[in-house]
Length: 211
Image (cartoon, rainbow, N blue to C red; front, side):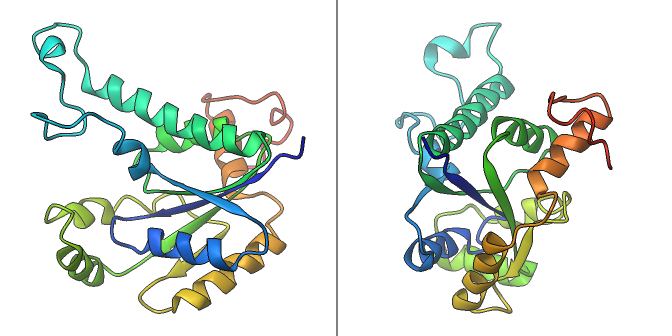
């Protein structure tokens, strides 16, 4: 079976990742699914809980409750969904803003063996905050909380600035990167770095410690 490709859009909240994902689906030559991190988040139960990782009534009083563990399970589930879609023959556009090196390393490990590109989606902070207010579905300050840390793992395979470029221009840049990917793409770079400092070690990368 042909393995699909993964195109990952990485950026702060309100940077325009979802808009860009829709435009890519309309303009790329092949068929692409789109699976956003928020799609998985919306699978959580609603009701009295207002936070993403708040415990159920049964968990709340239990000494084993750990919100970091639930977040870890959620991330692993999302990453696994992306890999499964690709490995069963479909292309998928992923949308998120990963803020910790450990998250990116897990994602890179999960995507090993899959042709994957990472797009840095940039936008100035003042424009992010303007969009955040306009959309009305994000708490104030959410974009600012991401701004200084979401792009600390560059260089990306390609980057776009949604305040300076039109959506069509951004799509054109990404299409060029898909047609001519770098020799060592972003996620392969993450795996090599992890291997070099004692993190995740892939058997395919033990002879490629170039960074």
